[in-house]
Length: 493
Image 1 (tube, rainbow, N blue to C red):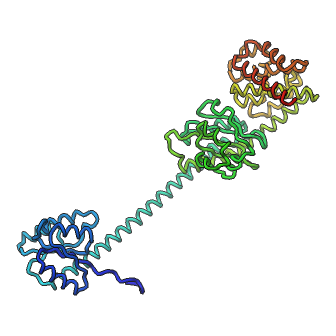
Image 2: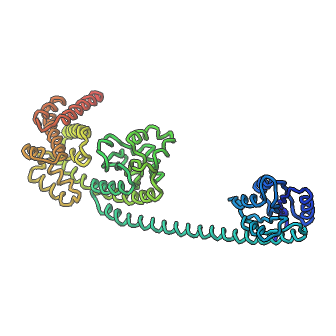
Image 3: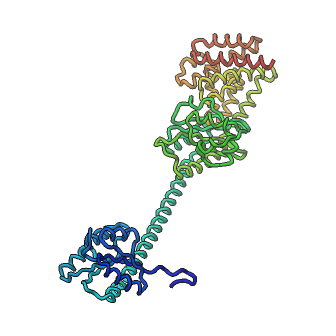
């Protein structure tokens, strides 16, 4: 039923095709009188052109036509992909059964033999239009049902995918999350986390930067899938715009999303230059505690929505785990610092100790000594020979019993190796040996400085006493660090 004010639909249009002008005019008058719109054509080719261009509601088509016969026209229109079911009434002077069969075999809906009554034609037109309208309504309903079914299937598919996604996220959180939360060793935590992420995201490498002290820069702690050299020297300022922005976003972000931000023009290039495409912040109570820097996927595609959601969830869990690990390490470090105050208490000695620590730390960083061993060097220098005494050994052992990370035990071993050349020569682990070599050089350097020797003389003495245990790269790194120390003291003076 038409609503009030709604415009009336246009009348059905009829295409009349006949090469006889009188027939066309007669049918045009009769059809117009019954409210139909009429379009005419005089040959088969014009009939096809008008049928495809104007899309009439029904076609009255003479069989005998110039250029193309009505049967050929009928066959062409039935092959039209847009509207192959337009009603067609074929009209012919031949009334034989064979002519009718041929008409219906070519796709005609009705057949009328000449001469015919216009009233009979109009009755047949109305019947065909009504039947065609019912068929179109049924087709429309079928299409609507198909669309509704497709929507229902799509919703069911989305619900299934969402259920699977939530299940996978739950399993990921329960599995890896539980493993991370029970780990208090920053290095072990980082390696497990990065290994799981690399496999989950399908990337070449992923690295973890951690803020080691409040307000400090985020520096590389571990990398999975590449050498540590790739991230050596990389840092993100803890008070910089990049850290603030990532902490504010609280979600993984592709570097190309940040390249348009002018405030990041100085901080972003070092990350991009190293080939990292995705940054994932790990937030703490006071801002950014850590940052994941991630390669592009190996297949060249962007991370999927599911991957990014999983990464966000894992970053939240990792944030809690990293906070716990950092707090535990701070407690152990504080205990070690309290021990370190015992052997030396005067300000001059502490200044020289800090100088020696800075020198060996710079050299260790240059040779890519891992952060774990590098971070133990200042404690080793502070404790020195006192760590081998009965008192020192007893106090270190008491802290070691509480240290689930193994750092205190590693520190004790490092001091033993540094002060005992025989054990150092027998040490096979390259990282432990290199750390002990730097620590030994630091001991000899500090000893010379405490006796009043200059920086360059102290280093020469330390290098001489370490002898062949110092490889060429470590020796060069210590010499470069000493030159930098002299330069900084000269600037200060």
